[in-house]
Amino acid sequence: MTRTEAWSIVCEFIQSDALRRHSLAVETCVSAYAARFAAEGVDLDAEAWTVTALLHDFDWEIHPQAPDHPMKGEAILEARGVSAEIRRAILSHASYSGVPRESLLEKTLFGCDELAGFLTAISYVKPSRSILEVEVKSVRKKMKDKAFARAVNREDIVNGALEMGVDLDVHIDFCIRAMQARAGELGLLGNVGGPDEGNSNF
Image (tube, rainbow, N blue to C red; front, side, top):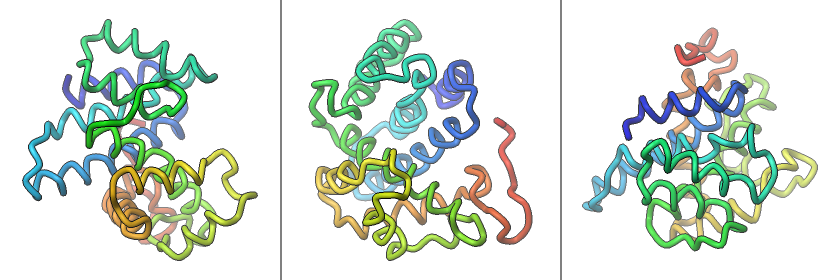
């Protein structure tokens, strides 16, 4: 499956711009890691990583309750011709699915999912409302504030880095930089340097 086909599925099942942008944010982080790992000599299918990240929450609006998401969504993806590797990775990102995270793709998706959402939330409370203003120290501070972005599982962020074998601060910094590089597309430029570039998908 190509990225274009995956994005078409996302737009078919997700009507919320915020959730679409979350899919793009997770894709941004996961694809950045794919590029880094490939440069380090890891043999991987970069487009499969992109497709996995885009589709990981595609059924959230129709299956908003666990364990329906992503279990019921998996059958839809199978019918659409999505590979077993991608479907398994999507199942594994939900710890309650019973599918253990074994591959580098599975661990990376889990490691980036909650963090991408958290970085987005932090961007929105910055004076500039921009990811460009987000720093590791502010992320670590907000992680201790349980009243902020309550829906984000801090334990998953910490465990995600652990499973990837990456220092948490390094992981946070890597994802910040990846999202900064696509700030306009993610709607996270805020009022820095003028209006957001936007995204033709919205």
